[in-house]
Length: 178
Image (cartoon, rainbow, N blue to C red):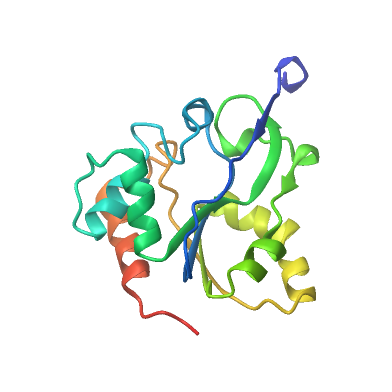
């Protein structure tokens, strides 16, 4: 059946990154709605922006540029592990493994050495990062702390929003490392 599916090429967009970020939040690849809008976490049921804005006591009704500015002010960068891939739809489980191309993390992290902590937005981001990126970082002597957090995707409905929010808030509240 997979042969009959048309695998759509997908390309991520540039990171949200400001001056001296300390945290980098990584997704796997933007979903269809995010790609259409060219905005991170654009699906209306994705919990990312409600979790982030609530943590910083801001309204979820901030427009996208204000949300990005909030992240930059709070020294948080956002990007995706994959630069490009093919998949039908938005689900990570449908990404064609042979099509995965990772973003250049050595370059990003050398430009932003203040990043000491990476939070993975879900298991797929962590899995792909460990498979395609970690050895390059070790070879470049870039050592970071990593933590997987529950996916904010609406596809990860097994966990209630309040539980996701609590786990994300705990991670964001932790003292900076390094």
